[in-house]
Amino acid sequence: MIKLLDCTLRDGGYYNNWDFSENLIHEYLVAMQTAGIDVVELGLRSLKNNGFKGPCAFTTDEFLQGLTIPSGLAVGVMINGSELVSDIPQVQALERLFPNSAENSPVELVRIACHVHEFAASLPAVTWLKERGYKVGFNLMQVADRTEAEVKALAREAKSYPLDALYFADSMGSMNPDQAAQIIQWMRTEWKGPMGIHTHDNLGLALSNTLRAIDEGVTWVDATVTGMGRGPGNARTEELAIELAERRDKQVSMVPLMALLRKHFKPMQEHYGWGTNPYYYLAGKYGIHPTYIQEMLSDSRYDEEDVLAVIEHLRVEGGKKFSLNTLDAARHFYRGEAKGNWSPKQAFEGRDVLLLGTGPGVARHRKALERYIKQEKPLVVALNTQSAIDAELIDLRVACHPVRLLADCEAHTKLPQPLITPLSMLPADVRASLADKEVLDYGLKVEPNTFMFGETFCAAPTSLVVAYALAVVSSGNANKVAMAGFDGYGADDPRSQEMHQLFEQYLATEQAVNLVAVTPTRYGLHAESVYAL
Image (cartoon, rainbow, N blue to C red; front, side, top):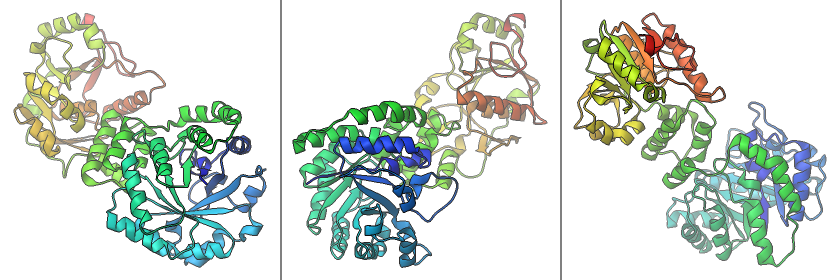
């Protein structure tokens, strides 16, 4: 008998701090019953109280007693194994988490989620919970990359406890159906009781992995409405409910669930943005914790290049365990102390500079810009591979982002201009890609809210190439900078605010050079027309 467990209000809470409205929860419970769901895991139960979290972060008996639970729908909660192996003695933690026995609580099922290193120490909690009448499930996380011997050893340990279901979670979303089947077969050699699977959708395989697991004898399966869950999310309840209704040969009504999607979950999905995408796909492929991607996608400081650079860093350095400190270090991908061996003064001192951005303004006003260059002979500096004007009129190029450099390395080797970049601080693969290029090595370190202009290196508040270029100009003691192709973004685009802030920070420094936008711009820069220069 397959048990379909919906854990939307628990797993989905990673997006909205478990703050689901009572109206949504009421409609959700009705939809779950009519769609044939067996168990609803209505949230976490936790002793931690850091920052605001909604009711489903604690899921107390008092909260649950205020809900109308439809008949036939079992209620579950999840606790994290880390809270059972903390400074608080385990029994004391359990007594605080579950002050009532099962007969006096709306909760029927307790699931314990734990990493492999917490498993043995957490298992005694099973006996304590069973003695108080609860059904108990155990969710083993991050087992996809464990060896056969390790998986079998974990299953062997579980045999000594009266578990109602032993789950494994595809925590990184990196499994395919064959790998899921392999884990099941290994566990089955030792564990003969009910098994469950919790899948993530990084690779778009959450449903396929779940269905394959059912074919392999798994009888507990998880899903969430629209897949709402940490990172890219999970198998979708609306799809798995249809599949299981067919396998059970049982009629269900999907109407309340579809209404729930339209009214509540689709708007939330548009707002929070869960669901798989190429970034989550890469994270699944390389075994990187999905919360890294979730954090970056919700932070406007991270553009596409940043996200890809962090993924590459974590692929090499390892990212199975999420850490904000690791994320911050990964974004600052320039290695070691800031250093370089080239001084911008050689090229920039006393010169007027024309800085060519990547916006469409350069191509649109190409003739006027080329005329200005030929008449006034400024030092012409292009960002990255900007090539909208005659290449012979460009003197230097500036680039600093490792991922962008890797993507553009072939173009850079064909372009005739020397390239200013923090070469000695870049990863080895980037340095190798530029081996045949004339490079001017000017160092860079990224420090929040900081501009510093040294002789052969600088500090900037962001890894954006325009910040690096402005630091180069100031270090070189240029006279003034005419800026073309800095069109800007729409008012609602988070990059717009980031650029406004960047220019304000730069212009507030003592060594800032006068900036004049000579093509249309949305930024608050002093503006003149290239046609009148």
